[in-house]
Length: 239
Image (cartoon, rainbow, N blue to C red; front, side, top):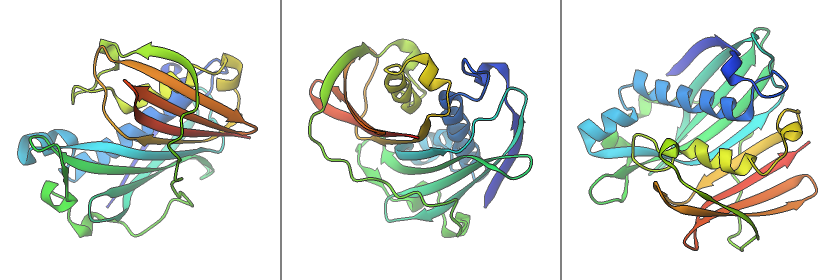
């Protein structure tokens, strides 16, 4: 199944350059994945109520080709491109009216049992193989990050507005914490080419997160730790 929708860049989506912000792009991808799952009746709320499980993002790889401007129209195409024993892979394309690729993404999601806190097979949470669309939005191969500590940069505290409906820190909030390490002129430029996020653990309201970073040329690595335990591994590639 393919989920498609149209939209345009509103003022709340814009960065200082009056173009689609990186955070807004992440929000569009997350909403599209949620709406795709909802159209198949296997969304997160259904998983909790019907199957006693919750879907979580375990990885996300996003490529930024061009940032559309305020009021530009765009098209979104979202589908499950593949699955494994314990994970689904969801591809999303954001394109212009003329078909130009603007943003592309592959998200890896998995289901966790609410009582046992263990991974569940997608088939136990409503997924069937006929929901998969055998297509690829592009070359989106996840990196294998090493676990060595990087250089500590700052600490941030998880606040109430960072929490999602599963009562843990929303995955986009980690992106926001990382992006805050850049000056506004970088965020409002087209310098960011790719962001890869690996979600390794959960955090909650009141937790203090330590952000680590090493920037080597065009490749910037980030870790986020909570009480010494790594919860996020990330890479940002610049043009």
